[in-house]
Amino acid sequence: MSVVVAVVLLGCAALGTVVVLVRDPLRQAMVASGYGAALVAVFVVLRAPDVALSAIVVVGAASPLLTLLALSRISLDAGDEDDAADDEAVG
Amino acid sequence: MRLTVFAVAGASLAVLLGYAVFGLPPFGTFHGPYTDYLLAHAVGQRHGTNVVAAVTFDYRGFDTMGEEFILFSAVSGVALLLRASRDSEYERPVDAQPVESLTAVGLLASPVFVVVGLWLVAHGPVTPGGGFQGGVVLAAGALLIYIAGQYRGFRTATDEAVLDAAESVGAGGFIVVGLVGMGLGAAFLHNFLPYGRIGHIDSSGATAVINAAVGLEVAAAFVLLVTEFTEEVTSARAHRKLRDDADREGA
Image (tube, rainbow over all chains, first blue to last red; front, top):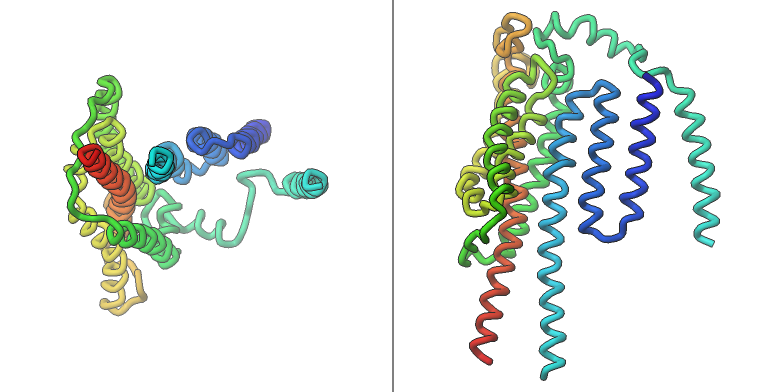
């Protein structure tokens, strides 16, 4: 049992480090979702099915989706600035 | 310099943390007075076989009410901020032709998620799950329609007026259950419904009502959150398109 606990905890630590090392927010959203899956494994191993159930949906769907939507909105604004720069260059 | 500081601090933290972890009692062997009491008496007192639900919705029901209102105020805040900064009038985009396999999988999975979510909410007091867990699964069922590429279908299924009402009824329902207990002369959130046979979904009295209210609130809150975000993106995109079109005509 304690071997399994050690494995899932180390998996969590490894994936957490990967999340920090990935610098592109778009990829980070996906990798963070994988890190969440490792967290779900920890909850299952520690016999907390209630927490695991909510974690699956929150890290698997809700949080990456919200991150992607926020990134999409930000990139629209960034696109506006590019346009403004283009306009000035043309003008 | 920064790396040196990090190396020293990180190594110290790792050593101390490792020392602390190895000093922990093994998982599953903790014996606190509260744990022992609940494990011995919770099922007999509350008739719910999921002791976690008995704790969150009954023994510590007041804490859970606070938690629920954290979610409620956070999502209401997002809705207030984003709705205020958004023009209400814009043309809703036509769905781009999505990948067919993605649409099929999404639309097939959506009702499955809804059924599983309802099941988790209904059986909260009996088996692992409950209002929070079932609520997020229900919300995921609705979000799958959006992920399947059916934005218009998603917005039709999740009418904002219905979501607002559902969120408020869910959050308010918790308080109403608490007040009914008080009105009958007991403490706030005191159970006022008869307990049923242990192991049945109607066994745990008012806990089941609170559990259902939380399920409604959580499902509505999550869908509302994503709805506000998607509206923000699509309205910004629509405005941008309008402006680009105007520019093109001008040129």
